[in-house]
Amino acid sequence: MERKVDVAIIGAGSAGLTATATVRRYTENFVLIDGGELGTTCARVGCMPSKAAIQVAEDLHRRGAFEREGIAGGAGLSVDIPAALEHVRDLRDVFVDQVLASSIDHMDEEQFIAENAFFLEPTLLQVGDRQIRAEKIILATGSKPVVPRAWEAFGERILTTDTFFEQEDLPARVAVVGLGVIGLELGQTLARLGVQVTGVDLATGIGGLRDPEVNAAAIEIMNKEFPLWLGKAAELSEESDGSLRVSAGEQSVVVDKVLVCMGRRPSLCNLGLDGIGVRFTARGVPEYDPNTMQIGQFPIFIAGDVNGDRPILHEANLEGRMAAYNATHEPIVAFKRKAPLAITFCDPNIVSVGAPLDTLQENAIAIGDMKFGPLGRALVMNKNKGLLRVYARKADGRVLGAAMIAPKGENLGHLLCWCIQQELTVADLLKMPFYHPTIEEGLQGALYDLRRKLDIKGEIPLELELL
Image 1 (cartoon, rainbow, N blue to C red):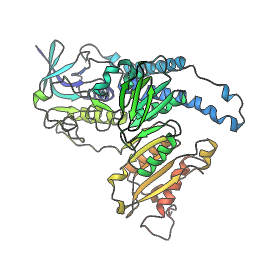
Image 2 (image 1 turned 90 degrees about the horizontal axis):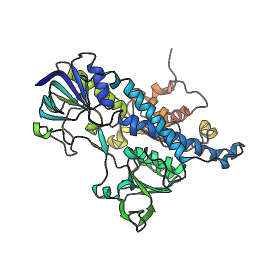
Image 3 (image 1 turned 180 degrees about the vertical axis):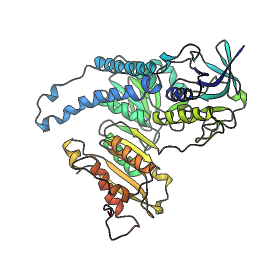
Image 4 (image 1 turned 135 degrees about the vertical axis):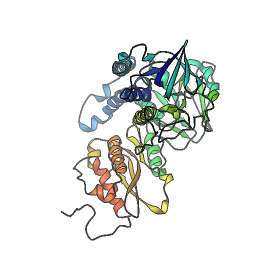
């Protein structure tokens, strides 16, 4: 016998839980389905435990500045790695409990089903031993780490974010393969905790940077923390003592474990989507409208990491709301997406915001630069390194994007992202107050540099506003 519901949400991660909360505003006749681990990728193995580990490493690393500040005893400080990792897991468990306490813990067995779903028809699901007929379905099954199949034979010597935070101790030598967000964050963390780290990436850019000058600055800074081998693919082989040799081009190193950070693959296997006629892109993702979240013309909506588009929590939450609204309303409507914002929480932060440089016409934009070396606030913090580049349209000064490796870049990135979404100009930003001494003065410096390169002229300075 079929159970009929208005909406079925498959996946109880960030996007699925947000979708559920939104659906609940319009109907109580829904079901949430998830047969995997609960607590969201962010809380269990992503954003939150990684930030806990980063904080431990940064606190320990700070001792390197004590002597020049006249603080004695820094050289004698050490870290108890097992205790530090237990602290990270304890915090992780708190974050997971908070997620569950505010969501699934309040659902009965009719609302939440701890089983996997399979599509029999576009509106009919097999869930365990029951069938559920839903008028609309939201697909939010998340993603899982990519590991080359040949490397799976190395067993526990291969780490991913799914297993890293379960380690009770750290090996002496680690290679990090993949220097995107998580690879840089955990690579630097491991290095600051005393692990011998080597970073490897086939790409020549790190942290997702697409601005060549900021990328060059980031490589120079991060290479001082641990060696980066870029532009060559990693190859693994086993040594006679059970350790692993990691080679990239002419370089090689022997390590105890390899942390694989080569991206994440959408969790779409065993759902039966191909059997109901869903068309897939070359990346193996269902064809969908990113402004409505609808898959083709099916009564199915997709949200979160499973679409592989913007695998970031605030974007997953937005997509969950968009999908949920359209799953509970007719006609389907299109929504405006938020200005892109990506942050790598290495030290200094790497941030990309708005339009990437390689998507803009070179002769139509101007670029303002600011180096953080001489910035007063950065100097006293002992964090005076990095580069900020802001892009604006020459014709009217509208800010389009930015890239940076900068102290407190997470804060600068938010300021710029809000300005870009509000379609503000360089003149609009320069009319804002900039307190001294702050890191935000670095943004002011980049804007002053940008102002000089714009086509806009006038007798009144851009930073002044008539009463």
